[in-house]
Image (cartoon, rainbow, N blue to C red; front, side):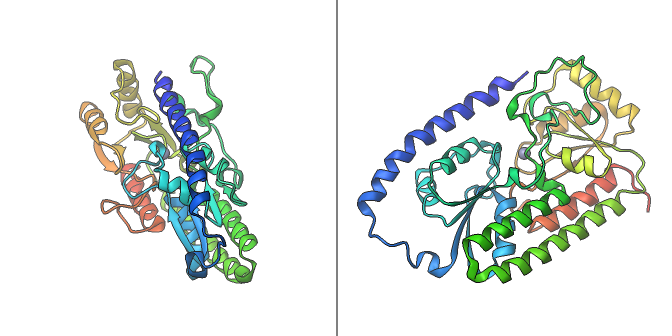
Length: 328
Ligand SMILES: [Zn+2]
């Protein structure tokens, strides 16, 4: 089990953030020139904790918002640490959108920010515990009881945005929050939310139809990010190592993966763009499988297969169609 490796940095991050916030609050008190007017040039200042939430705010807010993404492109959001100036900026936001449980440093800073309009995306839809965050194994239909992997409370799978249906629920909640924070532009926010939800509905249909004529349900990933997506479309995600995609699987795990790959006609080991592909290549080499990218859309970089959420998700659909042997 590598749970302790996850816990220690999280505690360290929270402690670091807790130490930083009071110092900055004191600083801004001395330099404050009073009046929060004209911040953002009259635009609603929205701070989002990572790309999928920033994308919603940009699409729904349009020209009336200025969106700051706390997670810079190319940074793995699970590992985010906040710079002092980011924590300071957070306290001046009109609206903060985050996803509780994904980024401990952000959770702590949001709690201390004093900002009135805070949105927790985790409360806008339903979260499940897929177990993969903790022990690297996927449980779709319940454990057989022999696993012995104790699940942590914090084990709820945060990757809700990869399921277009759940992401649409989050979009509706973000729309409502922007309307509440900026009633003057509520009609525009409502219209934009409707458009975005319709686009997510079309994406859902594309996945549903596009995966219908598949040869197998099972795909292998290095990062247990696709549990909700798998469940939505009747697939099975087998994560090599849960949330620690760069560690080597044990010989016993390799044997289990080998058996699974043969039994379920797995063709492909997926890796992602923000972490090393070394483990994926090692496992694929040992099992004589291909590798390909399945992107958890946790950030957009030059290496992403598209420039926004929709483009990357359509790339993911194409990759799944290849891996699952979809017949045309
Ligand atoms: Zn993730």
